Image 1 (cartoon, helix red, strand yellow):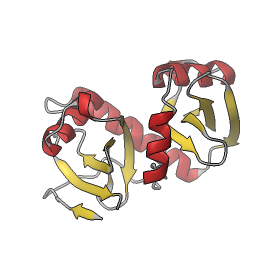
Image 2 (cartoon, rainbow, N blue to C red):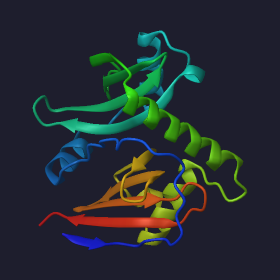
Image 3 (cartoon, rainbow, N blue to C red):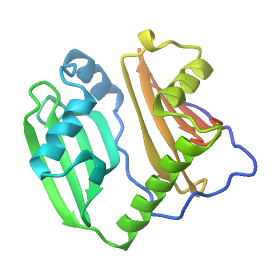
Image 4 (cartoon, helix red, strand yellow):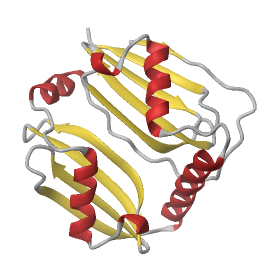
Length: 202
């Protein structure tokens, strides 16, 4: 494994909340997911989950919408998690058929409310700040740092996440090239790279 850490000075926390777990591909799973690519988009997966839950997009706060590969079933799926109406929704959506594979609904607890607030504040800050960046711009920053282009990566995901290490909500950017898995943490207000991990499959 090769790891590079870059820390930005003077980071200000957007809000305190519990850390959000984000499942990433293992090297074997990455290869399998490339062989079983998604035929629907993450936008379509979100829409499917919202429709099933009976929730309007404007009422949902997404904490995760990421592609994943299930080693047990051999299915490439989207994991879609969001908050709405005091509830925590979690969905697994088949990335080829848009079929709902699993759904769970729980009442939000205190940590969920803190995380939702942190995500909302980070999104608002990114939209209103003169230096705020979008998810697409965060991905572009990460690709430029890695010396890569979007056409060279086999998988990419960017979403807001709360990071305990920095005490702030940041963009979690992940993409894969060959046997390398790149993971970046990027400040949504400034575009600064907070951390970069590169895992290499031997």
